[in-house]
Image 1 (tube, rainbow, N blue to C red):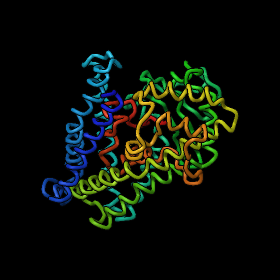
Image 2 (tube, rainbow, N blue to C red):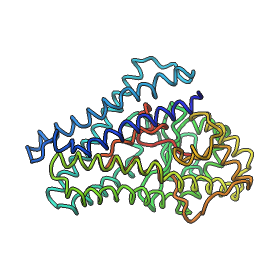
Image 3 (cartoon, rainbow, N blue to C red):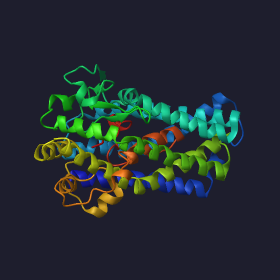
Image 4 (cartoon, one colour):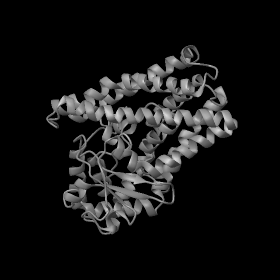
Length: 379
């Protein structure tokens, strides 16, 4: 089994485990049985929310061990010692859990004060805050230090307000952050150190199209709208989450809705990738140089240059390099430009954090990798 396929099976196992538990918990109303259904004092409620986050962390721990340490060592992609990995994981998992508790607490307070509108408003506010502070959160969780944007880069590559991330891991790609209409970019330092290898000028052209065509804004709006639907469904079924048990039900609802998003949202995300590639060529990028850069970037990820269309449709919002090259050569349809929603699938996973969703760190691209729990790998 290839490294990429091993990670795919691991991610599917992690997602499947969390989803099956969530379904069973909803069916038997586990939150109502195990969590306080009446206000019990805010300090004690925080303790209960922390316990939920701890249980989630314990469920994810074996998958993280495989995805972050065992598999990379087995396939010769890492020599990291177990102690070093456990320290990185403990830090990332702890901060991720703090984020879950904070989101749940804000939703709890807003629901008590303002009812359903407070629930919805709290989620939207948290989602917008997450979009703005993604680079800082990523750095805290383990992606690396934020560096001055003048470090071996030009404003033409990632914009005046861009950020450089001193990421050590090659699978850290950075990406976009900020609210719709105010897109800014995170660029990993290793891209700047190997500009020719990753076709950095072509990446700059791609990013310019993603930003100015509205593809990134559509991706963010689709991600926000998708998660908002989960909040509305929770309000319809359970009412405002005014107790810890209610918050638990909302977390389960967000988790299941995120799973449906894993099946639906990759398609418009892939359209965005294809259209960005074509836009870079139209703006003057050399096709062979861009293709070589895409090959290098995939080797930095899971090294799966080709995959079946069926597997890609369900699991991969970033198309295989072979499919991207086929689109660049006119041998494959790129999808409608007007519906291209760049990075919608993985943005939705990040924003599910604002609704206490539990799938954000379980998918194959980031399981066991705290450095990409907040800025998931992009194209």
